[in-house]
Length: 452
Ligand SMILES: *Cc1c(COP(=O)(O)O)cnc(C)c1O
Image (cartoon, protein in one colour):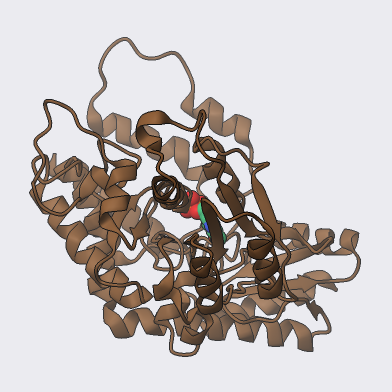
C-alpha cells in the first residue's frame, strides 16, 4: 500500500509542479475521454497498481489547470500544500465525520478550524459551524435554519409539520443573487416564485432604500432576507450593517451568501466592505474558493447553534449523541461525511492569520493590476473593482465573445465570459494563492495580443 499511495501522491505533486508551465485550458475531446474510461466492467479483479496506471492514462488529457496561477475562470482558487496533504490523509484514514463517536479527531479538527474561521471572518465566536460540500449546501443549511426560526416565531414547527398549511414566508433577495439561493429555496419547499427581488445599485450590491420599502410594504410575519457578500460578477458586497439592522427591525432573519466575499473580512484593505457582518443570523462561505482548500469544502455558520441543530439534526435509535454542543452531521445536510475539517485546519494553520490576510490583499491588488493594465491597453473595465473580480468589454458583445474564446484557446491563461446588465463581458477572478504579478502581466499581454 505504501508504494501505491506514494505513487499517487508523487503524481499529484508532479502535476502541481507542472501547473505554472502547462497550457491552462485543454482542447476538450469529451468523447475520447469517455472512450478512455469506458468499456465493459471487467469481471476479474485488477491489481491496484494497474488500476492507478489506467486512471492516470485515462484522466491525464482531461485535467484542467484550475489549480494553477493563471486560471481566472469562475471563482475557483487553488489548493494549499498542507491542506492537500491533509485531504490525502483524510482519504487514507477513511474517517466518517458523522459525529464524535465515528471520528473524535475529525470532530475536534472541525471545532478548532470553525473557531479560527469565525475569528477571521468576523462571525461571533458563539456561532455554530457546519462543514459542508460547497456554498450551495451552506446556503441550504442557512436558509433551513432561517425557515425553522421564522416559522417557530409564528408558532409553527416546520420540521414536524412541513410547509402544508404553514403560515406564508416572505423571502427577499437581491436581483443579482447567486443562482444557488434559488435552488436552496426549491429544495426547502419554498420555490423560486416566493422571491421578492431587491434591485441592485450601480456595482451590484442591493439598493438599501429598496430593501427598506419592500420590508415596510409587506405584512409583518415570517420573513427571510438573503444578503450577499461578493457579487459573483462584480465582487460588490451588500451593506451588511444597515441591511441587518433593517431586517431585524422587521423581525426577519438575515442570511449572508458570502461564498468568496466574506473573505473580505480577512483583508486589511477590504474589511470595511463587510462591516456589520457579525449582525447576521446565518452565513454561507466556501473554503474551496478563496481560502484555497481542495475541493470540496464550505462552511454553514449560524448565530444560534440550537436553531442550526433544530433545522438539521435527526435522531435515530442506534445513534449515540456526544451530549455536547451540536457538531458534525447535526449541522449539515449530509449524514455520513468526508472529514473536511482536517484540510480546513491544515490550510488555516499553514497560512496563519497573516497569511490569510496577505492572500486576500494580494488577490485584490492583482485584480486591480489586471484592471489597470487592461484599461491602459484601451479596453473597458465595466465594474468598480472593489475585491478580486474584474469585468472587461472588448467592444460589442460579439467581439467580446470572440476575445474570450481566443483567450481560452490560447492557453496562456483562462477567463470565462458572463452577461452582466445585458452586456457580454470577460470575467476575471483572482483567487489563487500562487498567482504572482508576473502571471498577471503575462496574462494581460496575451489578452492584449489576442484582442488585437
Ligand atoms: C460559488 C458561489 C456559490 C456556490 O458555491 P459552490 O461552492 O459552488 O456550491 C454561491 N454563492 C456565491 C456568491 C458563489 O460565488
